[in-house]
Length: 567
Image (cartoon, rainbow, N blue to C red; front, top):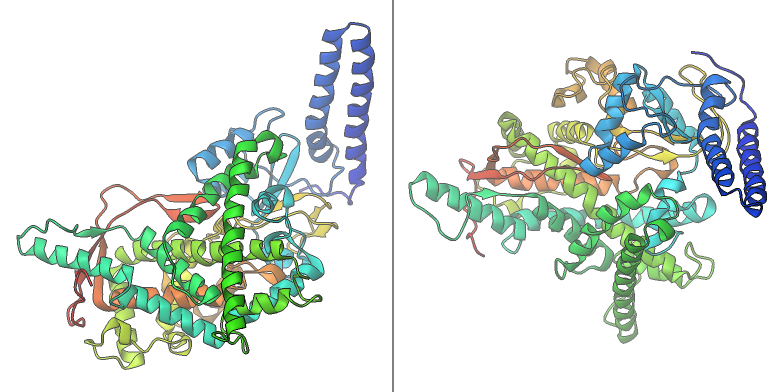
């Protein structure tokens, strides 16, 4: 692979700028003389130069660092590059799978793709991924992520850097990872899947009762014997984060409906330049959603301050995340510096990130476990043996806590394997380095300003790091497994479904405990199997989720007494 010293990137920029200025001057002169056709031709030539020059300068002249291998498959159009492939993948919701196809076609772990005049370098070598995210930590690519700033504030935590990001992240890190908060999360999740008042618990009981009736030859007119778990997991995960934020149960599905309408709008707007100009209706709808969440936050703040004033709520010590936020926003030198709009943006971000990724990871968990009934049985046995639970223990009474869940080592391997196979943010982070990057694996040079993509799905299916990468093999995470301790170490160094480095997900521990609680609570009382006849496919809509499927629920032998189907 040919490499050149890091180039003067300004050479390309200067050439494009010169061509554009020259064309503009010529156009003005020609139009003034009535030469409209010549003016149009001149403008077209400038546009073609602006698109074609960066690729020619990079791949042919070697002016922009390393020229990486590209996919050899069809679909690379003259001038437009692979824009059509990207648009189709976005429409079909298979973006992360396209990135995997490109890597296979490129025949190299790090590769490049051109879209019009923009080069995107995809880094999937695990050594380079760890270096870029954990050590170099280049800025996020705001040309892709800036759309999220349209909703409420461009200073939402997802988009900030430097001191403002560090201070805000530090403020939120403690309440998201405190022992008392995590214990509440476990308790709420367990109540949802196993308590009499839990929506999920009632749905499971109803489906199991219908399955039992069907097995006995009777018909149950009020219930189906199959169950779709996707919406139930979304409601459960949102209930957990809502409780942690404001110490209240989720009042209705309206918040969930609003959040679910955000991603379908954000995904296409992501690839539109100047969305306020070129996608005004979608941008306006995103801002309207933002107004809803601003009003929601303001209502919670007003109610909490009224409780402070009448003495019905003591904020010392803080009892939830809202207490932490209000204490900070009142402090002129706090992380938010009194900026309530930015605080409202992060309030929405916590709600969205706190439910969406965990819910769809659980959706994939149930789908995977349905295909591996032996894993279901092994999890139940581990809970009974390690936690000392008689099989007739009611689900709501299981002694699940953050510390007791940590003792379930086989459950941990299942969690790591399923989050590897189906990473929630499968497309991975997008970065644009402010300074040149030299990759440690082979010395490749990436100039400042280059669009970089680190696709999680591709890295987490790397055959060298994860032999038989597309198969469910939880034993790969055990020192006694086929790869031994060395295999576990290699896998660990390549596992990053929650990101790496200073901007990795601060809610990893919360998501992990919520996931484990839900899986244990469901499997303790029920056996599951897929009832859907059609194949289930992955849908990548910023977060990865399976297409709709149905499960058949039956009561596990020796399980605790059944809840009433309608409690």
